[in-house]
Length: 377
Image (tube, rainbow, N blue to C red; front, side, top):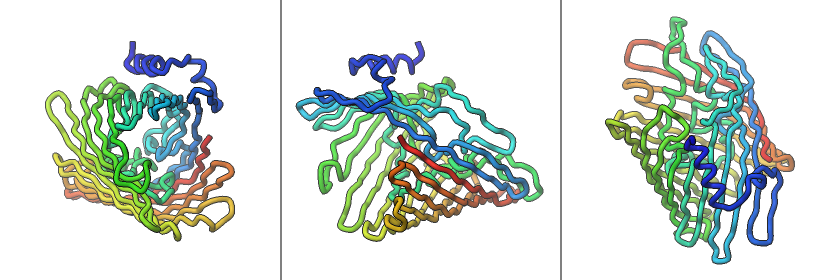
């Protein structure tokens, strides 16, 4: 029996809930502290890409936050402990990160689209997670209070990462944006993870907490690596300022070697005005590859009556990412409009990508425009 199937049976069995309850799309609560909540989001987008000579246009699924469905099954206990089962999957729509000059993805679902099949048990001593889900360093460089990451984020490749740079002589290179504009973070794996309780904050759900996890890749049959990591996070309000920060370090073991990575981010927002800023970075100590990302923005909560409006500008710089000697850059502008009563966001983003290296090859600048909506339910 495949690992994913065994894991699903284990998680459902641990909660003692029949499969027909999981299929119920409505929220449900009982008198014994149990509840069921189905959720999801639709995230269609249009992406136009210009590689310096040719232009491309596609309807896609926004990889910054893709279309997905999921379910929470919760059980609270009298002593304050809680048990949660979470299943979540993407739907396999053509991803904005997968299109290129030579490839148009199709709508296809396979097991790699599974995002979460996990059980979480929390008590006064912290939280223990078992199953497919986020490693401790997943999102270690994603701390961001701008509320416009659906349009642009430190994950540069999510907008148009499958496209190749074109050289000055008009030929397609073999360097993709996803290779030259990397970030170093953890991911979702089949793992065991522990989070400490929050401490040092203004109340019980604020402040610092630490995480550590051990995992393997269960969804990719070609990946036999083992993953370990640790992370620390902070989230609180300090006077008129909101502050969010995270940092993580990870190790990846294969049959013959161990590689390492680290990443982190700090983000702040001035609550009365909505002005905000974020910096993030990370590195692979073994190869020397690094990235740096920064964003400045304004979250206007009362500009229009339908909901908050977010504006941002951001910048990315990478070195020795795809290979030694590479220098990559990106700058972008973006805007997001919230429609609070509809649980809907509409957004527009424009980005320019650059690439240089020490091989003597010159590359043309590329650009991408993304427009779309995200509807949560």
